[in-house]
Image: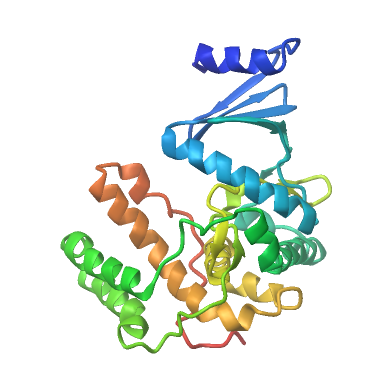
Amino acid sequence: MNIPTSYLEKVRTVYPNISFDHLEFNQDGLVNDVVVINNEIACRFAKNDWGKKVLSHEAKVLSVVQKYVDLTVPRFEYLEEGFVTYKYIKGEPLSRNTLLKLSEKSQNRIISQLAIFHQQLHSIPGEVLVDAGISSSDTVRSREDWLYLYKQAEEILFPHLWRHQQTWIHELFAPVVKNELDLSYKPVLIDGDKSVYHILFDPITESISGLIDFGTAGLGDPACDIAVQLGNYGESIVWRMENNYPMLANVIDRARFWMGTLELQWAIAGINYHDISLSLAHIGSAKDVLPIGMRQN
């Protein structure tokens, strides 16, 4: 575990009396390196100038989110350009397999937590977001953006794909090409990337202990967040959110489309940046997603 000395020195300036009895170092993220100290304090270090901007924006987002959602989220204790600290939130990633192995009662509790979080997040008043200076999420896409992605898929991915895979991509984009999928929405505060490793599970209480990483949050399409949950847990689980997330039926088709594009976006990025890890980012995603226009029975 080779933690840069500069990171530990920075921590010392903020917590001069801290002991480094137990250290964990995570470099998996695209934006930050994370050092966890004694399972008590999480320290995030931006990897580049873009990461510094992300941290600054995330601080604005969290200052609002903390007031409107019930689940535990990071509360920055210290913030400077490219460096933040907050109380460590304990828990393990809430994978689909972990969720499905629980009792129905525990599953329902967790699914309700997820649904209520998204309902609360997507219902934060617009004027509050404007006053906080929260801008658009990096996930925002227009119809033109989706058509360009389709073109990229044909040019970059098709030479590497079998015919049935090419057909699947054609079918995925057909409703957008034909203008049959309504892509309009009212912008709300979205998370944009609440993947399984950002949803922390407490195996003792069998509930969600907290949510981390709001770096992609901002104004955007609520369908984006539901698409991420489709990728996390599949449509049969996501539909169980409907009682606590009543707008589900209105966003599900856009979410289905969005979910289908996620692995394409990462595969294209992997090829363009010569980074196979990007292309493999969606291995393990749930495949339980219905075609656009269908209703879950």
